[in-house]
Length: 147
Image (cartoon, rainbow, N blue to C red; front, side):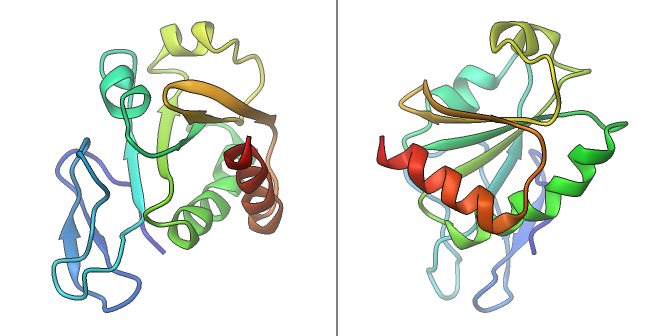
């Protein structure tokens, strides 16, 4: 499974194993340099770059509002990464640390963490509070994308 990706991080291709550098933003979706399969796109964003990283994304975005001290947040991370891998090329997972992005927390009305939101063209089309297994998250994301 991919690990958390920051501006200078790389992700290993789940198909062929090649390590690839991922952009924070792009006009398309990241693809493996060897096998050309879509890569899971997992990136962090905060108050200063959320508009560019998430709202301006050309593909739907799954936003994870979390905090390092939150047990349920840590529990749901592997499930979110699995969903990002399974839906590679169709969604972008953007992680927002609520302790470091109080403006986004207020703007999105985050009162409980983890809180998840699906954005299409910058608009919230789905919202969920609390942790859930990957199968439930995949179904929830699919329903939100169908709206």
